[in-house]
Image (cartoon, chains in turn brown, orange):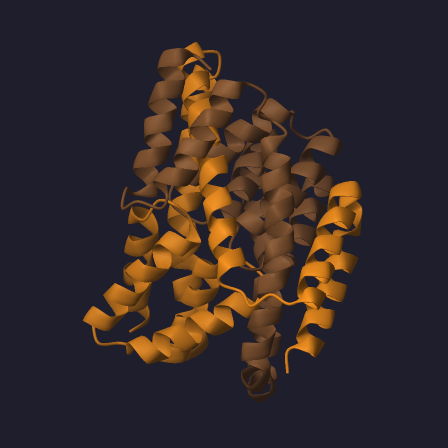
Length: 166
Length: 171
């Protein structure tokens, strides 16, 4: 159980710019260390996105619960939040310094997030093999530039997936 | 005030599906409507939340709480944001445990997953479009991507080096 908690503790420090940046890293950690199969990982990602709350915390809670029940869920969630709590506390102490450099840091972190998110996208696509599924990803990508709410796109593709039994 | 913050963030967290970035506009709207923060103040806080590791919705809530009523406010807001998803996940995990063999449920999750991949692509696309790229930035980011794909265990080192290099060049 501690191995799993440490994975989320570690990943917590890397989670800049929204949860998606670290999903790729999480996949490597969880799948290569044998916690989840690729199939289970893709299910966890769908569930995490469709329930309220930040994706990365949801993934932490879900994997913890799946393996070690309620205790696992609590420990994983907390482990993931240690990094932001720690940094927030330090930032409070160093408040003035952080304010001065915030803009530059934000721009630098945008670059970091770009790199991490590309890795995420790359690792997410390795689980897609069926050409029909690639088509649906492209449709979802294009739909995101219209006014259609992302949740409708996700549920729509889910229903089609259920009917076609992907 | 602490209770007010707690219930405000509890409600936002419970009712907003779609991750942190979906919650930010809702938070802005609610905080402005109740007159607790101006738009300017709110976006300053979101800016700080972005440079701290961790989910942006959680960080924003903690910072708003701290701003409005100190440490108790920070604790109340942070807790309020994580409670609803925690119980939602456990509920969904329980329901799915009994349905996991069902072909329709599996098809639904697969379909949703495929859509999510497309949406992540779209977030990345916007992120790339909104940055000012120069030769050095392209090289550093591409190099990091290649390194991470080849060996993901280097992630902490790569992230620190990349952040440091980009930070030094922004001046």
